[in-house]
Length: 181
Image (tube, rainbow, N blue to C red; front, side, top):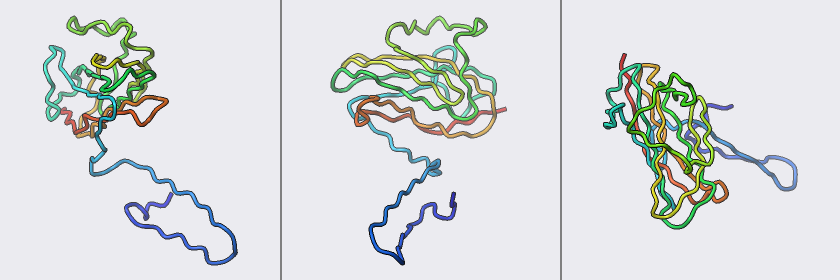
């Protein structure tokens, strides 16, 4: 809860008593310099944003109310990977369009996702996709977003990891988005 320690060195000193001192330090927050690490360890995950006609979106010029299609591509670079979770955090200013609603139009160019998804969890701030990855076989997942708030927002990196082996993972595709009124 101390905000004055951010980015500084802290020293812990025991001034009285005998014995061993145990301590625990936890720091959390959002990086201000947009330097989230991007890496590929045994797998590769990438994200791109397309418009309704499957053309790349200029993230420096998104119109409020526009529909964006997020395409996630994932692949194993080494061996068969089970229990992979892909965590796609949304930039503020976007919301996921619920594909289960009958009023959500389906775009003809998006293929049926089918059996490659074990489970999908749609939340307010992210999409979680659970799958298995075969080496040499790229899988793609598509979902729709709507630009709901104007402003400049950070695009968090998309991340993927094996749930039971966090040393195998990938993080990429961060940046900035400008949503115009």
